[in-house]
Length: 427
Image 1 (cartoon, one colour):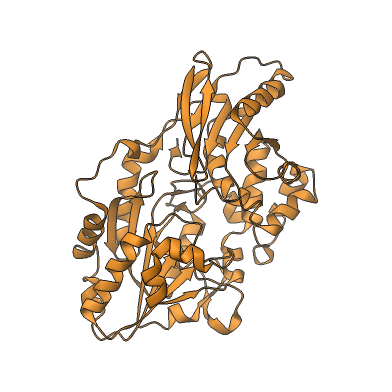
Image 2: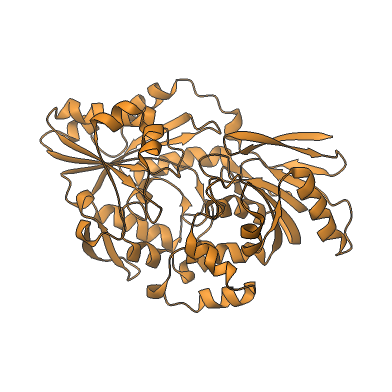
């Protein structure tokens, strides 16, 4: 029997697979990478050797109003390591700088104080000025004209009016923007709902270039990079993290050039060849990325890339926050026919894109390829309303997968495992 540990919330669950059925695992080589320095040293070195810009301390000279964008509660950015160093660098150049940490929620819910403490620690939450972005608060948004694609570019006014705009973040494969990090701190991070929805429209999501690990020709990335330049994002510090969310590699400097260096590093380790199978098990890498079903679609897309047509994806995601997106949930609850949903999305004009339509569109795409069995703490009815089959253990999930495939004349199907679906680019 092959035993594989899979992240589930803040813990693990075990997949026990008969040796004769085990088809292999798709694992990022980052699990084997051992950095030569500790987390703080890696970030400090990146700040000492920025790519395409002066040092942040030099850029801060004479800059009174400084805004540092930080990811929200849905992203495992090791801010306890990065943020103190960024604050120190700014104050090294300008001890009197008025610094605001702006939480880039995009269209997500507001980050709670408890989550901020977990992210930054008590000291920063107590002593620094922290503002949470609200994509619907028109009084705190500013219109910067048009994106290259024609959409409205409306972003957080505080970010745009900063004398120096900085962002921290992390770089990982992203299922339609190619990679996270860099320019994403602005769009969707601190953009308006209108801007985010347009950028994530059906035509762009349908593009063969809007895929994991793809940048060249990606229309979503192109608008995002334009938005970052228009917002005057002057400096980033981005990291690559381990499965334990510890810093393995860090870059700093220009929002594009530093990001290129970071993703080129990542590409050396995270690309894996597909191992086709009728059953594919995937995860969302555990907490914080598996807090809800909405986010778990990301890990499912890795399985989508290697599961056989008509097969079964077993998705492992704790989902303690439930579905995580009301419109996403209601979309599937109110329409049982996946093809009707796909036709509806594709017929929606760019400017009429509704919240979470992009996630729904990608989710429908993979549901049309495979049945999804969902292992979680979410209510069974909720999972069923999202067109999936609920399960509460790996044994139950595999048994249900076998039953589904047996009805198609397939027995003892091979099983491929992706222990962390958001950490790999499946070729």
